[in-house]
Image 1 (spheres, helix red, strand yellow):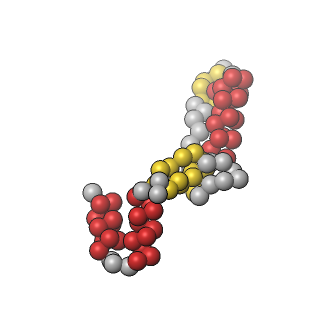
Image 2 (cartoon, rainbow, N blue to C red):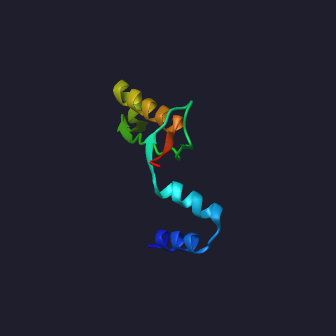
Image 3 (cartoon, rainbow, N blue to C red):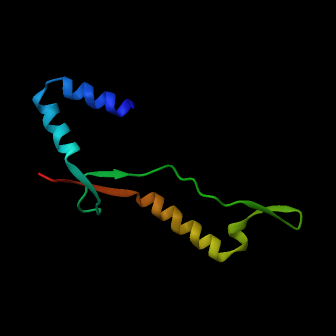
Length: 92
């Protein structure tokens, strides 16, 4: 609902530059970009899950016990650090 309100405010501004940018934005499609060709690069906060388990009375991260879990956690970390590249393509 707030998004529609903001778009309405932008349209009602009457500013040609704002209207042109809004037209481009609303008449575009978003595609996955690549590091050499993108409009937006987005990274997120890392939220990796590596639960603790009890082994011989001690709490140990599960990644210390399972090489496959350690590998998957490392792959997820690299994906998060790399981020997402977005390319905005105009239809007109």
